[in-house]
Image 1 (cartoon, protein in one colour):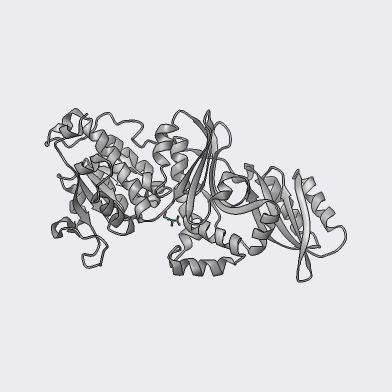
Image 2 (cartoon, rainbow, N blue to C red):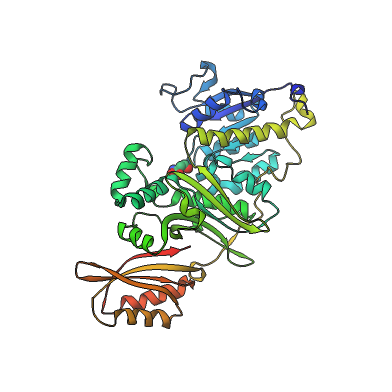
Length: 445
Ligand code: HSE
């Protein structure tokens, strides 16, 4: 289709004018040298909480309003761009917009990971699209590649570094030998971590994002509340040093993996990553998503996982994808049509075919790293080995190099073992008279 033949502008209602909203307005209004379809987009209304807040973008007075409800019900508007974040009223506004025949572009990982099913069902009934490229990995194209370019693959695993704040903290701890608390304070001063860092450092943000990636990669919804989640607060300089000596780096990984024909494991936890693995080389605030499938093998998507420009790039690419799809409809040449689509493009639409079954945690198989503080006396390593052996836990390496106060520090890396067997062995080890404590337990990729 010749672009010159298009005679209508597509009207956007943008909800939210924070970092991502401002970045999106800036990008959409600076079209020189970008895709010509940007010319077909009009920023028609922008909804904000307060009109008085100073902002980086200047918009005509009549475009900005605090009446968000009026935007999602406005018959003139074709596409709602939800960049306000949070659960409510974002969910309610998106549902209302869908019921009013509007397509949705959203960056809201929290809402999509919890209410994806409800939003997709409503959208599919209404014949509109829900586009969510910006909800995971900021500017990295990963949602559409999973839905489209990799759609014929049987996906085996999706493993991501999908939280920039924690990757920044771990990278600095590793490079400088600093403690978690010191780097966190610095990261907050530099604006890389929020004043309340809970969602990032406890792994909750990454859990939202891996739920979304898993539901797309495996075509079924993931119940967000069932995602196992451990953060990075307990990671110590000692563990980073041991990991390095053993040939690993510690990363907060979000993993969605096929366990068997019917079930998946979806989890977030700090993980020892072999230093030669592609994910080990992801530094600072960057994100990466490593996909394993058949027949593709291994593919990694890498780039900036947050920030105004990067996230605006993802939001705007969704808007362009929608506009491209809408202008290919015969009725789009008529200003009267509302572009409701009776047959949604299945590679663009969002569907869940029921929910994934998540495997019980004790059945998951992984390698473990464990650090023990023990009395420095003969036979302790032997007793540890015996306990592990009794529960079928095979050890890959055992090292005793350090002391803390008068206690010996013993580090063990296991071969693959079920979480259940490993924890049974630990229960028995804790009862040994020579064992003082087990300060760290981490999984190994
Ligand atoms: N807080 C997120 C991160 C960015 O640190 O990666 C937004 O998803």
